[in-house]
Length: 223
Image (cartoon, helix red, strand yellow):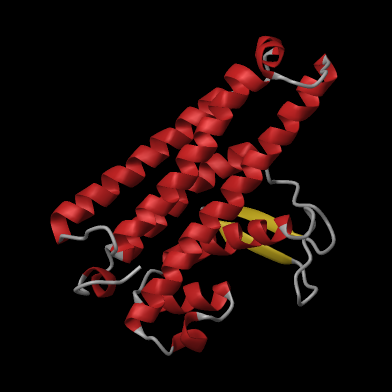
């Protein structure tokens, strides 16, 4: 996929977010202020921002004409190339980090709504939060996408290297594929194609969580 195609793909996923939000709102009466409504808005904001950034990168930032019309500093073809690559990396990291933040904050709220005392009042490490929540609402099939995305996010915290607190390699199997994380090494499988494959899985996770019986049957869940 070209950069602009990736941007458009993310915008399509963003539209699915909004469609899911509106569908649930019409069906269950969830409104602004309810965490089950808000989670789709949070994810939508991430996707539209990154998607638009990628479209801007392809149509403008990589084009010399844009620099001629907008740059207040001297530039060369190498400047354009380097800056474009750095901006693309910034957008990829932004997708990894902020989409996880959006999902994590909502899953903590959902767990507290079911059991305020669970996992240190919802303040435990994220792995404990989602493992507990998915067990309670009986959605174990979504464990691997969260395990995979969480570890990818954590790699970003260590300058691209896998540095787990326990010092052990791990292997995560998601949708019949194996992903190996080796201590002190970068993750070779991380690329934009993988992020495009995993992003819809994150949306499906949210849809299934809010539509699970114990979550959807609550009168309200304050964001």
